[in-house]
Amino acid sequence: MIIIGVGTKNPAKLNAVKQTIEEQAIDAEIRSYDVPSGVSAMPMSDHETSQGAVNRARAVLNQDPEATLGIGMEGGVSELDGEMFLCNWGACADREGRLIRAGGARILLPQALADGVRSGRELGDVADVYFHQESVHTHGGTIGILTEGRVSRTEMFHHILKLIEGIYAYQKR
Image (cartoon, rainbow, N blue to C red; front, side, top):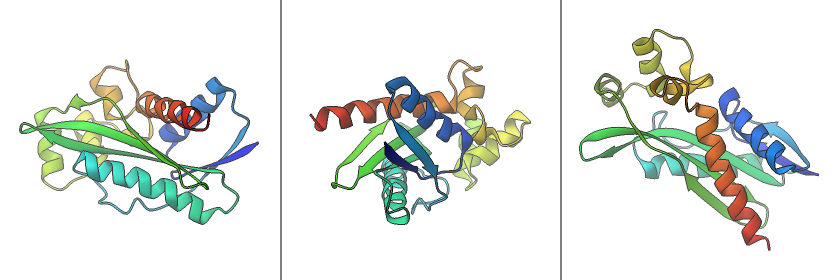
């Protein structure tokens, strides 16, 4: 059995890890940790969002000497041609020095959400007010609301973890 340390306490992200393990029939124990991302609370680029995921994956390995793998996931935003898109990244680090990163789908944010983020607020806080909900980021996420439940935050991160798991398996051959 392997021990997978996950750099989050967020239920949506932890569910993505659980789904990946179940689908791939991986014999694993999941341990979650509240570790710092090392980037701003609201990552404002793909680079910063990706770096946050990498930092979390590595921080887990530093915090738990028994963890075989460290998983980090980070949500953020990215600008393209003056428009703001939701983005998300994941990373997996192991004790042999491997680091695998993958990014997920993008979706254009409504102008009101983009303006709120550009004013210095976190997307989750802006979304809570905009959508008249509470703790959007721990449930379906902004993506879930914008797609009317067709894609959830868990699914977005699950997709990334499937990419990472596939690359990891390929590299270990």
